[in-house]
Image (cartoon, rainbow, N blue to C red):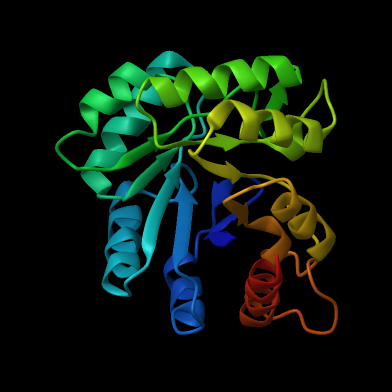
Length: 224
């Protein structure tokens, strides 16, 4: 599976994101992202540039759950220049807006609410949404499985995998242990994001450094 390191803590980009990137640049993480809140757009543009120059795939996750906010974030993603945009559900607008930049769009299935975002929806809802999103041309989805309020997270993952077919399934939020990574791998997940567990140093015991936490997550992703 792909490990997507999100330079985020408590659902916003960390203020020292550029310094953190410098710390982890050479340890082999091929997927690095951030959210559209926490720092200014110029900083995010610089960060996206550094990620691309390092040969990694860049991600921006949309925090807003309002239509207006999602559209503003998608326009910002175009200006920032990321490879993949995660979140929101405005598929038609996103695909049109992102055409020139070439960024892929990975929306949220289910019903995301609030900030920090929770996920409402049954496994049936998730499967139906994933099937629709894939048929609408999305290369994959961003599933907030461990933020679920109405179903077991792994049931939602399996439902998403079924509905998505061969699409790229990302699980975001609260992936904080090797056990969860293995469970996601067994359920057919393609990628997962980790942010706060790195900055809180809760993923792996023994060393609180950002580089160590990332290396342990990377090793777990390869085992999965």
